[in-house]
Length: 230
Image 1 (cartoon, rainbow, N blue to C red):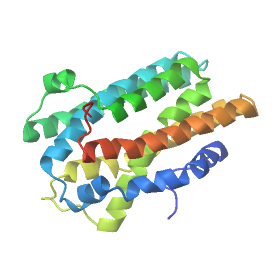
Image 2: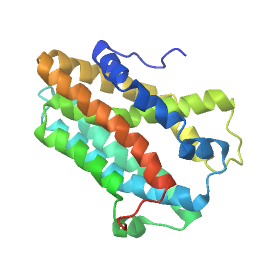
Image 3: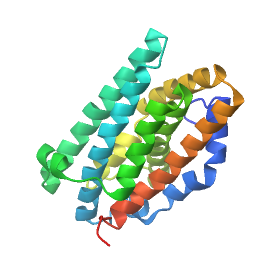
Image 4: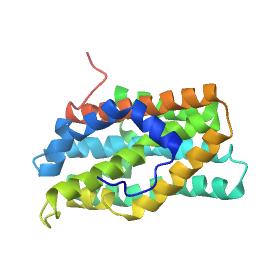
């Protein structure tokens, strides 16, 4: 499958390191059930609410990274990315919220699951404490995996039926408009990787790989409806 957006060398190295974990998300039972429409609506509701919690931290990580950018264009792109993750996703969540019976207050009142909290903390910590390239590497897998997954499922299905219960979700992430976003994100990742040393790049690759593992764990926490109880 030809890549829908250019993948510079550093991003290639990140993906290569994490390829097994990256591929594992595609065959997680949650993803399989989501694609074929058999996923229980209460499981999808659980996932959507947890996803909204996660995106608040994704936005935080982008905003923190904008303070580390010296080029105003990069700063602006990261600020826009922070904003977009809240605005675009909010529309999707509110749309499903009406169907599945939740709203902004439900999201605010819900505790993140252990997997979700760990993933959020990993991203924000990498953005705060790590180098700029480490922080950016920690957030890159989320959009990258979703876009690849959305486009992979669309290819597999051919078209998304109008009556598919998760059609809006599938249409959103298979939208080619995201290719431009990924092109910019991976170009910035390369730029920052080029400005640093091999040791820092190695740490950044590990941060990327961790996030890919957390992505799989995110599907899993939704599938099992993970709680804090033993």
